[in-house]
Every structure is written in structure tokens, then in C-alpha cells.
Image 1 (cartoon, rainbow, N blue to C red):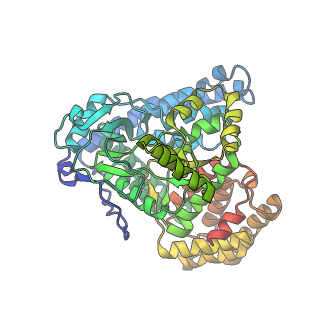
Image 2: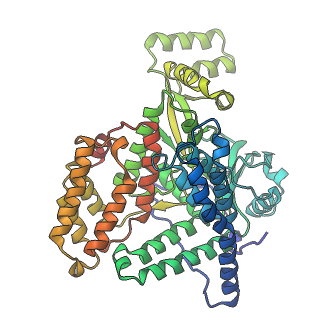
Image 3: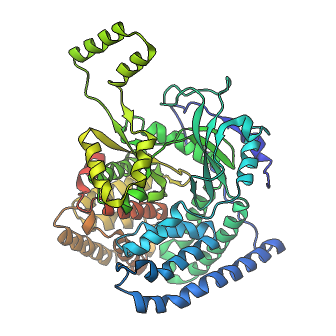
Length: 542
């Protein structure tokens, strides 16, 4: 394995998250120079490879579309999705950047047919894995050369999930005396069940080459006058930084600590706790659960509106309260588990528990009586049985869980891509949301005009106000003065606003990651609870 000398310097153990966690030190992106002979050779090879992989996809699309449009939901669905499966295979062969594109596409059930989304959803955690030998070598380097047998009581060679830039193994750490335990969380004393995330081999080189191509393409588009006001160069730089951050798992460990601090009082949302990490490996607490993608595939369920409420509320808190938001919230990065919190024990129940321990003072009785008054999580075996159950059994099983008092809890994974707005951007965005609640398009246009990077070059400010006013009026008429997810089409709104920015020469920057995140959350929320009104959660945080 190609080893960075930094790995030995930055390998650290778990520390309790500080009460004053500041932003992680983000290393500046340094893309390879195009004029380096080796880089130029890699770029040419990459262009040839992408051309060979994607040209057949483009050429066969018209044929597939002509013969299969409107027929994807028939009994021959698997046969009719041959082109989509070929697209997914091609994106996987193209590498991490294109896999990420496929993951985002799979979340847009309002724009793409469900059969297409179902095929692309396989890219969320079923990418071709790298070898177990590579993972073991990287983990051994994290633990100063110790063997896998010395580190773990159990270690699964087969990964439990494979993503665009890394894969995850499950293991159980051996008990050690020098491993600190975070008493502020639910972590039990060692041995500890953990998830081990390992970057794919040579992923830095492949992603860097692709990002260099994206940067060159962005610079080319920026040469056209009409593109100047879409801030393509700046947004490409932001996207490049976001993707590069995923290649340093030290940043993800820091992000997880920040999210845990921000959501410590939110019982419906949880994040893994980092244990040990360096640039290439992250060991974190393991959380059994159902992937949200599995829930969507087997829906609708009795919990859909509760899951949507928890997810949208968490997203609102990330943006409007914490200004620290997860930028990759596709269904493959969200686990669902169920917890049961008993009602406060009455005096009679407490007395009964006390007498039980007096009659039988054994440890098992003491543990059993204490469990009656503690929050408990659905056990992994029950979750596995639910996962294997036929689709038509999901609703009855989940209905029984709901009747017995179990509520959903979201475990959010893969926190490598996060976004933070500047103070000015955050203030303007909150003001725009407030104006949006009143469908005041002219007020939103004023905010866009005041924060344009080139206010002197704005063309027809009054016309821009009227245009955005018309967009908001159309939205108000379409939604009846509310904001239900079923009537909001963020992709269409973003397209119309982009046209407005280009036409009136309003130059903005810094919102690409937020737009991507909003589109992902909207797509998931729409599938879970399309009639959910966004006015209430927006009002709470504004």
C-alpha cells in the first residue's frame, strides 16, 4: 500500500469532543500541475478512458428511450432497465466522482422513474470493493504495525458497505487498558463493536485527476460572458474542496465530533463516535440499523412521516442553527433504528422493582429491573429479520413496533462532506427564507442584488425583482400558500433562479453545496411524506 508519511504523524486516539470545537483545519486543495509530463499523461489517459466508457452510454440512450419510455413499471422492468444498469456499471467503472453523481441522481425520485432510481441506488453502498489485504495493511499502519488478530477479537473481511471513496468493515476491538472511554456517550467499556472505514487504494490520484478535468472544464465555461454571472469558477473550486475533504478521514472524525456536540440534545438523530483515525482509516462506533434506502424501497411504512419530520428538522438545525451541514445526505448515508423510552416510573413501579431486587438480589434481576426504566434500542437480530422479511410484511411488523412504543432514530453516516456559510451568506439566506415564507419575491430579489459581487454590473434591477416576484407568485398559487414537499420542485426553482442570475448579471457564490444538499433532502423527504408542510420547521428555526 502507498503510505503517506503524514499517517504516522496524525494517528491519534479518541478524545472527548471539546465544548469549544472550532472548524477543522482544512488543507488547501493542491491539484497537480497540468504541465507536468506525468500529469499530462494521466489526463490524456483519463480522457480516453472516460470517452470509451461513456460514449456507448450516450449512443445507446435514444434507442432505449424510444422502446422503453412509459413502460418501466411493467413486469418486464428488469429487462427494460438494461440501459440504466449499463449506466450504473459505467459510472462505477469511471470512479469516485461519477459514482457520487449516480448516488445523487438516485435520490431524485420526482425527476426520474422509480425503476431508474432503484437501479442507481445500488451505487450508494454496493460499489465494487477493494481487497481485504489493502484494508488490513492500512489498519495495521494505524495501530503502529500491530496485526489484525492483535487489534480485533473479530474482523469481517467482507465489507458491510462500499462507497465512492472508501469501504467499511465491521470488527470488535480487543479490550485494552490504554483506550480512553467517552463517558458522555453510550459507548460501553471495551470490547467494543466498531466500523472501520478505509479509503480505496490510489483514490487520491484518481479523484485529483478528475477534479483537474472538472476545473479545466469550469475554466473553459467561465470564458463565455453569459457564464460569468453563475460564478462557475468559484463553485467548481468549492466542489473541488468538498470532494478533496472526503479523502482525509481526519476531517471526517472532526466533523463527527462537531455533529455529536450539536445534536447531543436531539434524541431522534445520532452520529457515530470516532475512536481512532488517521488520514486513510477511521475507526468509529458501529450502529446496526436499516439503510434508509431499504425503507424507501419497501415503503410506505407507518413511520414515514416521523422519519421525514426528523430528517427535515435535523437539516434545518444544521443550516439555520448550527451553520454546519452534512452535504451528502443521500439514503445510503442514513441508517434507521428504533428506540423505546418508557414512561416515567410511578411510585408503585419503583417499589415493585425495589422489592424484586430484595427478594432476588442476583445481578441478572438487578439488570432486568433497571432495563424496565431505561431507553432501549431494537436488537440487531430483529432488524436483520425485518430486512429479510417480504415487502408485504414490512407494514404489519412496523405497525406492531409503533404500537409497542418504538420510535425511529436516524444515524447519519459519512460526514466527510460538510458545508459552512459565511456570516454574510447565512444572514442573507435566513432573510431570504423569511421572505420565502411570505412568498415575497421582490424582497428576495433585493437580497440577491445587495450581495451581488458586482452590483454595478446588474442589468435591469427592477426587472429582476418582477421576475423573482413572478416565480414566488407561481409557487404560492401552486402550493395554496403553504410549502408542501409534493408541490416544491427545487430543481425547477434553481433552474429559473439561475436563468434570472444570468439574464440580469447578478453574480453570486458559495451556495453550490447547499443547493446539492437541499435537492437531496427534498428528494428523500418527498418519497417519505410528500404532504409535509415546511412552514412549521422553518418557522421554528427562523
